[in-house]
Length: 116
Length: 116
DNA sequence: ATACCTGGTATCAAGGAGGATACTACGATG
DNA sequence: CATCGTAGTATCCTCCTTGATACCAGGTAT
Image 1 (tube, rainbow over the protein chains, first blue to last red):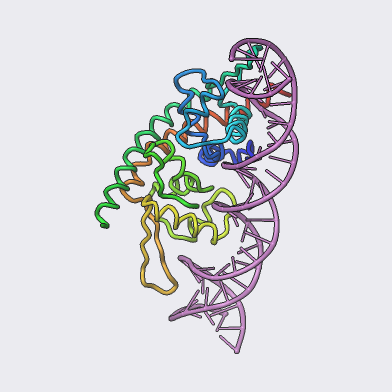
Image 2 (cartoon, chains in turn blue, cyan, purple, orange):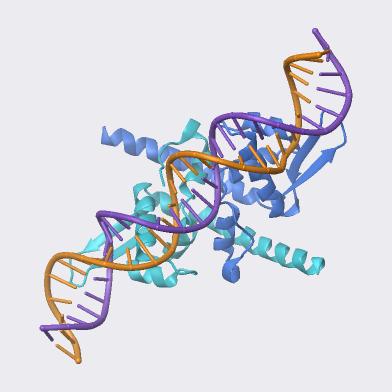
């Protein structure tokens, strides 16, 4: 996941790059409600995802500035992830994506039905 | 680009899958204004993209139902791509993405400046 | 005759993202 | 003493996407 290039500073290309991770959108969606711990995130994912992958994905989002990682000095460790300021501003996109995604699912269902 | 799975029918996961192509967002953005020809699309891309890649990308979007391909029986060939109905509904997302992308670019600029 | 135009497809190579597995620290619990 | 829980990192392997290149049709321009 090579990022932070901002080719030509195009908003669309930039957005595409930020969203390139396989789980970025869903992670941002999960973090909307507030801080979530690492293992909790893993359990909440809609598909199985290894902690290796989750870790990489979170690191990328943190590196890009969308999320914040807070570590508590406890045993066992406790790490909470939450949205940064620019991450919170992404909620508008999330809303639009959620709406469109639902409509799209309906669209595909109907199409498949007609084909049968 | 293997698609059309709709895992658990989650809108966010679905959207993520549709947007997985490296150029999907920008292509949808370009098609907002109306039909565009193949070579014209290639020329309008912000980075160089081979016609092989463009062809695959368009095929994926067409297969997903977001765009429509219209072929005119002419020599030399003339093929126009445009948004489908569900593709047009994506414009809300595009708008949000454009706004957020711009803000994000500003955010990154400031961050880099501070670091220096 | 040759090159050029469009809009592709076929094939191969390279790179990167994701998955699987093993390993880590440190304490609590059985 | 051994295992569990958290939150990771390090490595390796594999698959997928992209990129590069060559090739195609069929008519027109030089």
